[in-house]
Each structure stands twice: as C-alpha cells, then as structure tokens.
Amino acid sequence: MSLVEFSSDVFLVAFFLYCFAFMFYVIAVAGKKWSNRKPADHERRWGKIAFITSSLGLAAHLAFFFTRWAGSGQIPTSNMYEFMTFLGMAIMIAYTIIHAIYRKPLLGMFALPLTVIIVAYAAVFPSDVQPLIPALTSNWLKIHVTTAALGEAFFAVGFAAGLMYLLRVVDFKQTTKEARRDQFWVEFSLYSLILIVGFIIAVFGFRGAGYEAHFTQEISEIDSKGIEQTTTEKVAYALPPIVKPYNSQVVEMDSFLGLEKPLFEAPYWMNGVNAGRKLNTVVWSVIAGSILYGLLRLAFRKRLGAVIHPAMEGIDPEDLDEISYRAIAIGFPVFTLGALIFAMIWAEKAWGRFWGWDPKEVWALITWLYYSAYLHFRLSRGWQGLRSAWLAVIGFVIVLFTLIGVNLIIAGLHSYSGT
Image 1: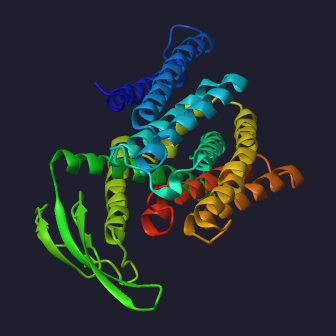
Image 2 (image 1 turned 90 degrees about the horizontal axis):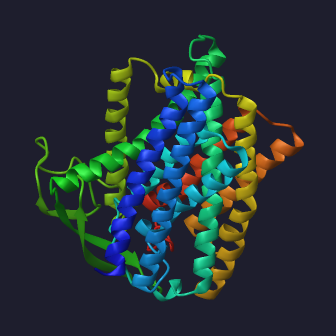
Image 3 (image 1 turned 45 degrees about the vertical axis):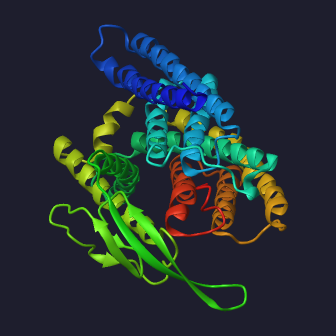
C-alpha cells in the first residue's frame, strides 16, 4: 500500500472519529437532563470522552496530511479537495486551542459538526494527486495557504461560539417584531449550513447511482491580439443538468425523474469552462438543502432554532461572547499574515505583481476589512453580546463565500487550486 492510499484510509478514520466526538458532545450537553449523575459530573465525564475522541480524530487527520505530503512529494493544499481537508484540520487545531483555554464542552457540539461538514464537502472533489503548475511551486505557497487557512479556522470557531450565543439569547417563544426578526435570521443561518449538507448528500447520492451527463461546449475568448478564438471543450456533470453549459450540445445524458434534457442554459457571461456546471451545482445545493430543511421541520414540527434553544439553558452567554471574540482576535493577525502579506509576496514571485484584483484577492481583502471593522466596533464602540455575535456569524458567511462561492461562481487565477 502506498502512502497516498494509506493517507486516504486514515482520513476516513478521522472523519468517523469526528462524528463520534460530536455525538459524545451532544450526550455531554443534552444528556445531563436524563443522567443519574449530577449535571456537572455528567458533562465533565462525557465532555472528557468527547475531547479525547476529537483529539484522536485530529491525530488521524494530521497523519493523513503528512503521509499524503510524503507520498505525493508536495504539500497537500493545491486543489479544492486538499485545501478543504486542510481547513477542516485547521478548525480542529483552532478548536483544541480554544478548548484548552476555556474548557467548555458545549463549544464542541457546534465546532465538530462544522468540521464534519467541511471534511465531507472536501470528499465531494476528486482526491487524486495532481501535479503542481509552475505558479504553485513556491515555498511561499505553503506559508500563504497554511496561515490563511489557520486564520479562517479561528474565525470558524468564533462563528460557532457566536451562533451558540444567538441560540442561547434569542427567545423563540416571543412574538414581538424584533424577536421575530432575530428568530428569522438565526433560522436562516442554520438553513445556510443545511444547504451545504444537502449538496453533499446529493453529490454522494448521484455518485453512488452512477449518474453522468456529458456536453461539448464552444468557448469564445479574445486573445492578447484582440482576435476572437473559439475552442471546443468537453464538460462532464455528476448531477442532473438543470442548467447546461452556455453554447453547448448534449453528448450523453442519463434521465432523472423524467428529466430528459436540461431545463435551462447558463447565461452568456458564464462562457468559461465548467461555468455552467458550477451554476448547476449552486441550483442543486438550494434544491437538496431546502428539501432536507423541510424534512427536518416536518420531523420536529418547529423551527430548528427552537429545537436547539432548550439545550443552551444554563450556559452563561457572556462566556460564549468572550470565546467568540478571543477566537477572532487570535485568528485576525494570522489571517492578515497569510491571506494578505504572504499572499502578496507569493503573487509577486508567481505573476510579477503584488496585487491584481483577482476575485479571490478582492474577497480576501473584503474579509480582512470586515474583521477589522469587527474588532474596531468591539474595542472602540463596545459592541458586545448580540451585536458582536451577529458580526461573528456574518463574518464567517463571508469567509465561506470567499472559499466556496467565489470558486463556484467567479473564474479567476485561483480557480485551478480551488482556494
């Protein structure tokens, strides 16, 4: 067995350990109401078991990272699969550090599912080792990607604590206008996470069923001399093509629920390779996530926020507010170094310029400016509690769009890496 194959097996072990750790955290927090032990003793006992399990998962994840690195001969952060697996590992590292400071098992009940979602999302992409293009063969790439991801990981922990704060303080029984507004946005935050889960389920479902669709697409581009060049590309879909590529023809398409041909064509401005497939992915994320959310609502017969809220009783919201702020305060300088300073040095080495207004560069700057504003409002204006929690949640939504949305919707120099 090669090191790359071994790393894949260890990665699967890490995933299941994270899932078990999440269940143990749920038992530690929600199960204390039915335990024969004192609530504090029950939470401490199961919280310790959960933390040990999550630490074993992190150890397996680290083993995956370094064995894949050794087996491939390059740091595993060069494509979407590798970067998302590294981000999941970074979130666990960040969580472990924050847990060591505050010792709050409840944080694990929210940080672990976020890690599981990220890791499962990574598994959607091809896991083959891909050779690096010349622009990526730089030590600055390793420094840039790893530090940027670690900074984003601390933002993820801040998001988890901020969302917990909202679920703790928002009263889902009140009917005032302000209460209904807060209830709606908390529920929308949970719905947004479920969209990602729904997409993952859809991809693995159709992949397991062996679904395929193939197109040929004519792509027109203007070269450096101003002459229009037309090329023909093959595009493969793993999800039923609700949206087909712009200016394309069907080569082969399996039917699905009576869908014999695509319903729509991607707009003309999505002329690039895989642009139509990316739009189709977004559509399927909304469809699958909405169906999953609807099923959960039918099962619980109430909003998901109202289901989770009772488990938060007895938790000091000020502790959650402090954890969220500290996580973001730790992550901000790390993100500044990785996503801006080291990124600009690498860009100068790779492309001969420090800044080029590439979409990923722009959104990295927007993320940095947003968290700069967060810290400014927190420290100068005294924005704590509810305002601070909302800022932490919105901030990570921007991070997710930078990582996932920009890659799916906007083409740029970072498209090859998926980061």
